[in-house]
Structures are given as C-alpha cells and as structure tokens.
Length: 256
Ligand code: PGA
Image 1 (cartoon, rainbow, N blue to C red):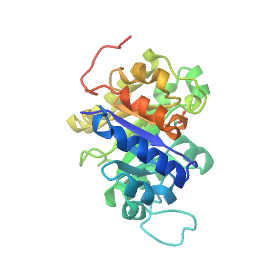
Image 2: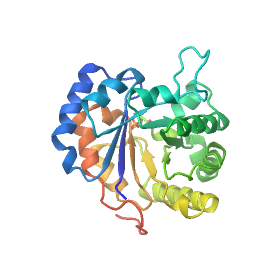
Image 3: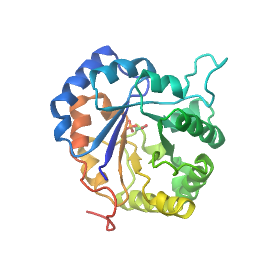
C-alpha cells in the first residue's frame, strides 16, 4: 500500500498557484513513491482537476445535506461534480471555527460517502490534553464518536492524526509519541472494524516539513501525511512526497 501525501491549502491559493503546482507535479508525478491528494479551496477544485488529470483532488469540508437553504455551505455532490474524489472532514480548524462536533463530522462522513467521496477524518488532542497525559484517551474518544458504523465498509476512508498544538506551530510530537498514537488508533480501528480496520490509512499531520518528513513517514502505522503550510510551496510539497516510503503498513519497529 503506497503512502498518501495530502496537501491542505486551507484558505490559501490562487489560479497562479494552481499553475505553479500543476507544472511542478506534472514534471515528476510518475516517479513519486506515493499517491498525492491536493485539497485547495472549493473555487480552485475544478481548475486544479483540469490542470492535473490523474492526481486526486479533495475538498476541505462538506455539508451533511445534499442540497437546501444553507448559505455559504457546499454539498459533497458539488465537490464531486467539480472534480473532487476526497474531502477532509473534522479538521480542528473546522471544529474550532465552526463548532463542529463529532456528531456533525459523523453526519458529514455519511454525506461524503453517499456522494462517492473518500473522507479524510481528522482527530487530535490539544496541548492541555497532551500535557495531562490524556492525548490517547481524547483522540480515541473523538475517533469513536466521529466514525460511522459503516466507515470501513467500502475500503475508502482514512484517518488523519493531527495534534492541534502541532498545526502551524513548527513543533511536532516525538517519534515515540507519533508511533504510540498511530498504534492506539490502529488498535481502535481493528477492535471496531476487524480486518477492514487494519487497512484504513492513518496519516500524520501537523508541521510536516521537508526536514522532518522522512523521519515521520518511516514510523510504523504512518500511512502518509496531511500537510498544511508546506503544501503551498511546490518544492517543499514534492520534497515531502519524495520522502514517502514504499510500504506504509506492516512495519512494526520504530525507526530511528
Ligand atoms: P501544517 O497544517 O502542516 O501547516 O501544520 C497541517 C494541517 O492543519 O492539516
């Protein structure tokens, strides 16, 4: 199973960045050791999909309903029609800025799946929980409440572990902490979904940069990375992608 490197542009980007990114990726996509997903703002999904056929494009959120009176929101089917195949759901910035609860994330996952999108479901503890030694308990609680019963049913769907304190801060957990959390998430997925839970990719996100990507991506149960800031700089994003390892699952020892 190839690792997956996802770029989350957040509320950044422009037609110029679409061109720049498309040129950079086009030049080397065939030789990359991983799969890429680019998640630009919704207005750039169609141009990015057109500029990079063959590269997966994702949204950054969707509404739980198919259509209706929800000013400013976007439906999963609309993302799909624009060219998206994936959607990030439950990012901590959505949870904080828009009060998204686990129940809302769960409903959105249902909408995404119904529209044929692969959900990338984000979970992660804040700094207080990490300091108090509650990080695993918080993350597993979030995971349990956010994922619907059929999450593993069609083999689509991934989980991104993103400690809130590591996002945009330049700080990341230690290799031991990342490996422990990914192991705990894997155990919870297996316990709930059986063998299907063993195949769900678990990505790490939070200050992944060219300088730390190889160490993070070599850890057991790290199926790829969700990259924010560094995904806006084509050379940095591609350096991170180039650090992916060929086999994402099945490694058992902490590297390095
Ligand atoms: P960052 O963001 O790489 O800028 O820390 C990651 C994310 O929020 O997905």
